[in-house]
Structure formats: C-alpha cells, structure tokens
Length: 138
Image (tube, helix red, strand yellow):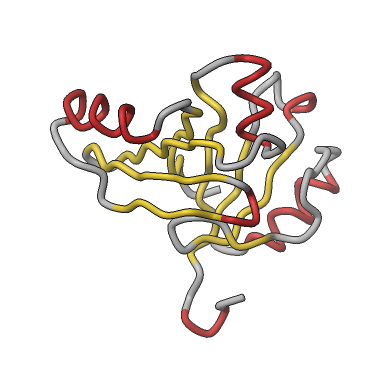
C-alpha cells in the first residue's frame, strides 16, 4: 500500500457539511459526484497532501444510510492507495483478511475500489483504491 489516500466521513447533510469543512479546512470541495450504484453523493476536499471524502446517502438501503442509522455521523472508512488493486486483494486474501469485494468496482474520484471487512481490521472499514487510467475505464 502506497499511502493513505483519504478518510471517508459519513454525513447526514452533504451541503451543510461541505460548508462546515470548507470553513474548517479553508478550501472548498474540489469535486462532488454521485455514485448511484452505491446510493451515495460525495464531495472531496484537499488539505495539503491529504484528502477528506464526505458521504451522504441517497437511498435508505445504502451502506452509508445503514452506517448513519447505526452509528451516526463520523468516520466511515480509511482508504489506502495501491498501484495494483487486484494483486493487493489477492495478497490480503492470502494473508487471511476477509474481503467485502472480491472484484474491484468503480468508485468516486476516478478510482477502482474494494473494501476489507472491519471485523478483521480492528473495527476499521479499510478501502483500497487505485486510480483508473484511461485504458482501464470500466
């Protein structure tokens, strides 16, 4: 794993949270998008070399809606950048980690993503993400 790519924070109101984080970080979000397949709207902020992703549910049965219902607003996941997500998933599976996604899927911010089950990572939902290059667009 190369570096921490971003920290994901589940929020109930993306617009209000965008205003809050813009004040906190001193910059507006550089990107906002909807990932319909995951039932989520996202925004991304940069703070130096770090990124923060805010996530708002767009459907009541989405993973973010379920998280908010169970735990409330707060840190949802930590994402690590990887060069080869397929190889990294194979390595982690061999090491005994439980994968939530055996096959990476298209996520926000032009990334292929996959998650590890938090039961095997001390309660932390870990996301792996790989930048999608032009020839990889799925």
